[in-house]
Image 1 (cartoon, one colour):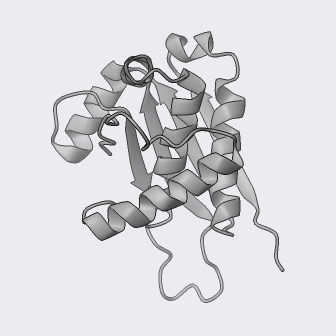
Image 2 (cartoon, rainbow, N blue to C red; image 1 turned 180 degrees about the vertical axis):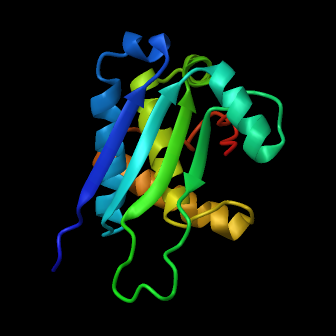
Length: 167
């Protein structure tokens, strides 16, 4: 059995994330757990930024002039002519501090647990999962629950209504 290889690049752009001393470790662990669960190799970049940057990204790439919690930007698929040269780069994920912190507070969970959830959610998008239909949402949420359980993070979908994941 081949072992999944993960390379997670992390950039902290917003001061707010520095209030969570374990932000880099938490995000990296969540991304690696998602790759391990899916038995995938891959590289991704995670940007921990602020709501102003998220608003610009959301407006530029989705036409929504508002901040959001997480955005995923899957890498372009490898060209068919590259036999055996499958790209390991999965894409980029960006997370906005103010929105994430407000959601965690409103949902009564730690920012670290919410960060873990959103990173797993974003990584699953980079690996091709989506939640456009109810069936897709159930499949994706099941994977999120399983990965988060590996990390010791409570089920984000039990109990209170979760803020929409708007990537």
